Image (cartoon, rainbow, N blue to C red; front, side):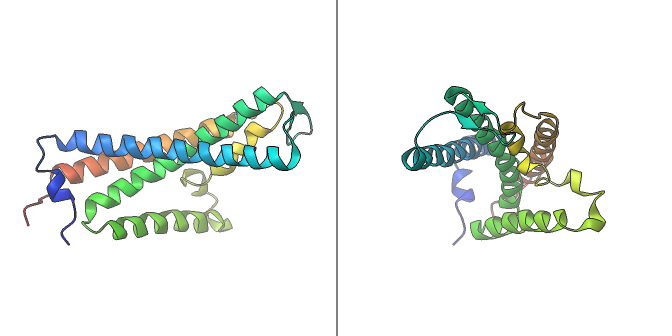
Length: 179
């Protein structure tokens, strides 16, 4: 099996556009997936416990509309982290013609970051790990919400996305597909 990259590049489209469309599709998928999981949680919770005001982690209650809005923001925040991880996966995908290799490398990348997150001797490195601030979505479930950690998390997500998308573009732009 020689992969589909060779066949995609026979279509008269620039490699940059191909990467951009592929990444845009993945980003939409990340957002849709997180919203579906959140919606399923709301549905299951509504069936089991009824629909009403949301109790925050601080103990206060928010009206249903505001609670749902915050849940949607949580999904968006998590989707941003997944989109950054997807940029890493896109980079791995241009290094190989084997889709399973790109998937395994991306999962290994994420797993290694979670392991590094737990090593106290690496405290200096942890703020720069992609996964370090992923749990910060909890801060939206406080009253009032704490934005500083989430803003820093989106900044790290954006940095990873830019670096790995540029690396993918640099590698893909010069990739020889004729062999």
